[in-house]
Structures are given as structure tokens and as C-alpha cells.
Length: 240
Length: 72
Length: 318
Image 1 (tube, chains in turn brown, red, yellow):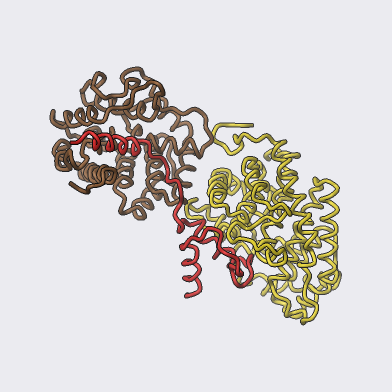
Image 2: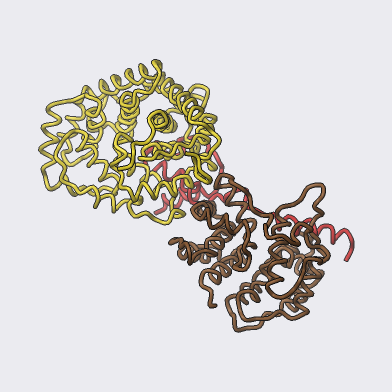
């Protein structure tokens, strides 16, 4: 058990899990036994909660490399979804949960797993090609913060309205990233850098490389920031 | 696990899932932390930068920045 | 004109922006006019012992009033206050004679010419000063002052305003400035930000000549100015925010941040003084003056340029 305070415990578990995923992304030749990592953090330590917070990114070592998840790894995700279900769509649908579960279901589908009927998955996320995260035409500062919140949708396999927006508004992503860096909000900046990384080959952002280096060195002790940076680097320069 | 713990964990997970940007920037964030110093450097304030006026944001970072500048 | 994600997408119409900026400008001019005696130079010290702060404040007052006269978009109240302030400042500089004496006393100093050029731009001239400046401008020494890069541009701009021959290469000097290096936008700090705003002011002659800014710098500012405006709006650093608003109004395709003007208007005190946003002004006006006359002057410049550019939109790109 990492700590006795429940909120601090889940936060700490999230940091541990994020660091695990980061290591896996940075060392593609090592195995990534997700189920074992979650078990090591433990039920009491907030392991399943951390899986829910990290979301589809827990699958990134499988999606972005040659690793294949075991049945127990998938089962660990399924158990976390069951234990921490998305809130019911009524009376108010929650677009963040819906978009994140849309990403999770899609990511699992890429790995050959049909999660549409899983207990706890957001009902609005199960089918349809339109992801529920797209946020319309807000002014850039609030739009960018919304995109940062949905950074787990920034994976190469997830084609949807949010990604279409990210491609259409790359200048605004870069503005949001620069603003977050000036505010010393490294996590938000790294999440926006990750969106920029997604279409870096088709629409290069010249500042991306130095921004990622800057964030990695200034946000050196923030494991969720480090995960976003590792993902951004992996996404911008795929080996396949 | 006790039901209340599960409930608390769910709230925490929900909070983390929704986490957006930091609501406040730290006192040492570049633009704010150097504000007083910059004003003084640009001679926009009198030689005594706060001129007896209390510093608006009471940030330690601002004062420390200024102390550093004076020390060097 | 309104497109997604651009600062122009703020829910403020040009008319609302003009109204706000007009009010901020008039109220600021009122305050400056009311406290103008506080800008007076000391009469009991030798000319060369007058502090740089005192000279600078008075010259900035003249600059703002000169911009009001040049743009001619103020109402009668603001316009007449600006005329009074210009005359007041010119009298304080003894109709140029003080600047002439300062330039004679320290020939290598550039600030007398820089100050004089503010007046020359609106028709106040002093013949002996100009003869001396013409001679100094021909010296090798005049081309190599140990100034920070944006200040070199100030001297070039002053030389141009007075109508003296130019010997510097503005493009090379611009390349030495922070803005000229088109740096990573997250590396801006308040000190470099003042350098950036002044680089734009000198290159465009305080908004009179938007073409003076190289196109690649215009493009750079179109990309990042809104980020800095957003950050300094959040910190409430009104002095610098007003300078950045003025920068937006100096561009070929001006960026007028209507929504931000409502924040600045809200920060302005009832008596018209615009606080710097960093230190808390004293109740006593003559004490508050020392730290808060500058943001009030900047507000006049920014508001005047904003109104002018909102009324007369961008010249067509070449």
C-alpha cells in the first residue's frame, strides 16, 4: 500500500503505472506484463483506479510495438473498467468519459478484443465512428485545454472527429502548448505536444522537438508528463 | 475493500479523468516571477522597485527574483 | 474575418472594442492631464543632473500625446488634453533648449536625440539641436553605442524621425533583437517582452508605418502574440499587457484583442489611472504616480492605435 489517504493513493498509483508504461515505451525490447504491474500496485493501492485514469494509454506498449497482450493483461483492464464504471449517460452525458472509453474500446479492437459489451464501458462509446470528444469551434485557449484533457485519444489508430480537429487546428495546438509552458503546466503542454506529434509527418511543427526536450528536462520528476512525452516521441517517429 | 473506500476512489478517478490544466500558475512562472524585476530594469519603476507599495500578488517568487538580481 | 481559433474570434465586435478603448484612452488622458505637474522637471538642479527617470517619463508623455495627435481619432475632450500635454512637455524641455544643452554636455549620449525626435515627429523643432545632431550622426562613434539591440533600433528610428541620413542597417540590427531571432515562444519572460514590444514600436514608428516590420516577424507575431496576451492577461500585468495590445495594433493585419480590452478597462481606476498590476498603488495620487504613470501612458498609446486600426483596417498586403 502506497499511502493511506484514498485520493493520494490513487494519484500515487497512477504515477507508478504511468512510469511503468513510460519505461515500456522507452525499452521496446522488454516485456510489458500489464496485469502483473497492476497486481504489484494492488487493489488496495489503487491499481485498477490507475488503469482507469491512464485509460487507453495502458495499451500503448502493445499498440505501438511488437508486444502482444496476454489474456490476463486484457482481463486486468476489464476488471478495472468493471470496478470503475463510466457514469451513466443520464441525466447528463459526460463527454470526457465517453471520448476516453471510445478510445479504449477502439484501442482494444485494434488488439482483437471486442469491448463494446463490457460492463462499465460508457454506453455512448460502444459503436459509431464519430468519437464524442470533438468540441466544435471554441476560442483557442479553452479548445486547447479540452484537447489536452483528451490526449489519450491521440494514438495513431484512433481516427475520429477529435483527430480531424487536431489536424485542422495545429497552430492552436502549438499556441496552447506554448501557453501551458509559460504557465509551467508541463503536463498540459506535453499532452498538446502529443497531439502535435500525431500528424508531425504530414504537417510538421518545427518547434515540437525542442518543446519535447524542454518539457522532459523541466518536468523531469512528473511521471504523467513523462508518459505523454514518451508517447509523443514514439508517435512522431514510428518504427513501423 | 469497504464500500466507502470504493466510493472515494471512484471520485478520485473521476477527478483525475477530468483533470484539465492547472488552475493557477506557480509564482516562479516566467512572466509573473520576473515582472517586478523587469519593471525595475526597464526603469519603469523608481529606483526602489516596490517604492513602499505592497507587491500585488505577494508571491515569494517575485521577491526572491529581485533579491537574486540585487545579489549579483 | 472571424475564423476559428484566432483571437479575432473573441465575442467582441469592433464597435464594442472601439467604445472600450475610447473610454480607457479618454479617462487615461484625463488623469495624465490632471497630474501633469508631477511630470515637471526639477528647476533647482543643473540640467545634466536631471534624472533619467524624469526625462523618460516626460518624453513618454509627449510620445503618447503625439500619437493621439497623429491618429486624430480622439473626441474633443481627449484631443484637447493631448494638445495641452504636448505643449506642457515641450515647455518643460524649454522648447528643445534643454535637450540641446544635454546633447552638448554629453555628445555620446543618444537619449537627447531620442527624446527630441518625439517632438520633431509632431512639428516641434529646435534648429541648433538639429545642427548638432547632424554632426554627431556622421561620426563613427554614433554607429557603435553599447546599447542593447532594441535600443539601437530606437536610435535608428529617432534619426529617421528627425530626418537625418541613415547609416545603420536596420535588418542587421533587428536580427540582434529577441524578436528578430524568432525564438521559441515559451522562452518569453517579462524583460524580453519589453524588448519585443519596443522592437515593434521602433520598426513601425509607433504604428505609423506597419510596413517597417519585416513580413516574417509579422507572421511570427500573428502566431504567438495572442499566447502572450493571454498569459499576461491572466497574471494581470497591465503595464506589459497594454504594450502587447499596442503591438497588435502596429501590425499590417492588426490584431485587436477586444475581449482583453474589457479586462484593462476593468482594471483602470475610477480616476483614470491604469495600475501596473504588479505593485498596489497608494491612495495618494502623487505617490501612486511614480509607479503607475507608465501603464497609464501606455494605455493611451495602445487605445489610440487600437481605435485607429479598428476604424481604418489593414492596408492591403503588397
